[in-house]
Length: 111
View 1: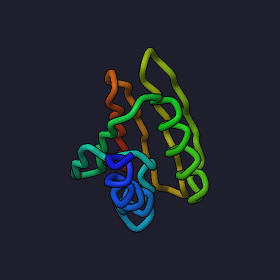
View 2 (view 1 turned 180 degrees about the vertical axis):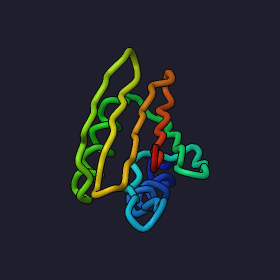
View 3 (view 1 turned 45 degrees about the horizontal axis):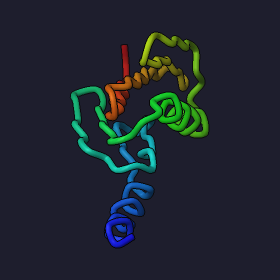
């Protein structure tokens, strides 16, 4: 119980975090403990200590579509979910991989 109470501020912080990649592309972090966040030239990689990569994909997919992005491509392979989105002329790609207890989310803007 004490360990759970210790994590509550971190979980609340994770709920409130939003990653802004550009004027048109941003997304809210999945409500789990973020292990790592790496900014890339055209995107971001976020690693969660979690199970259930499909749930993480659905969360980010719904977040992007709620922000006006339209999903134009969707693909599922073993332990990996990929999608492409459009918003006007802007393009984005979302990739979620299950890495045995760690979920890697990659969001890129452009081609």
